[in-house]
Image (tube, rainbow, N blue to C red; front, top):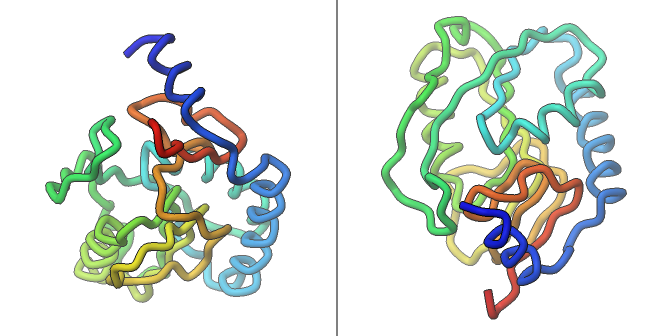
Length: 183
């Protein structure tokens, strides 16, 4: 990993969602979450590390009592190709029992990671599982679940920014970019 590689990745991408559109979608999503969850004192879990930026942008808009924690289940290991091998780095705490749990993640691709999180949280006794993602990738394959709250849809391309990375780079961008065909 080096600066030149990061700059090359950036040069082989294009912006598909502006920072203003990201901010507007987070505000809209926060309103929908408030309407659905403001009376239930939810446990909000952020999926590290991709959801860190999204979580930091969303939480200040959720102006109601909630409990916050994080989990870490990974498939990608700094590559652009997913792996079906999932690794729990930080599993959900026992505090999910009898709670309404809202899981925040950066993107819902095929849905396998979020489905594994859902299954684990429900098996641990959560009263209800809900999910919020910054974006959902539109793919032809059916998914094991749909997010309850979604900022926006993105095409079936490799996207990064706002917490999502390209080979470990560019999580810090305020925009969403997609690799171009020649990348």
